[in-house]
Image (cartoon, rainbow, N blue to C red; front, side, top):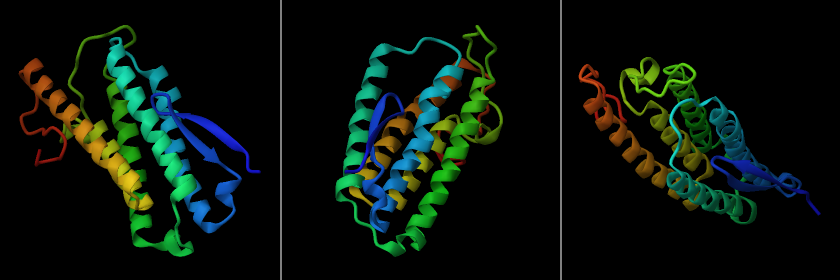
Length: 205
């Protein structure tokens, strides 16, 4: 009987990792790898980023909505990968998987770097808004959101499943709206905000 570990992800999202079961064949090994991709990203986002973030209190209602979405999505992704997904052994070398992993790593790097730049804007105790500078913030207001969208598009490509695609699509919709609202806020807040900077996609939107 395989051991089952329950790991906390994102904003208190739960993902079930059946470690023994997922290692019994190439198919299940790939499913386990997909779950680990979520673990490697989401654990730092849960425990490290939240402790390093400085600034204003976060509205409880938004937190609860995010927690509900992330919990439901985590259970959906885990259930599919544990009980439904079947990958051929050669999927490791498939172009979709390789390019998806590349996108995931690239997006995670952009996201982590952008979060780092945002944290450096404020000194301890400060709550004033400042214009983000550097990295992809040179081109877009929502560089951190762009990184996360790229991440989950890569995950959807590598997983090649309807649940993963749904997650990527809703992440694009949700984070795209947030990036647009942030961009509009910055334009109203700062008269010297860079006019060439777009909301989410460099040079386009």
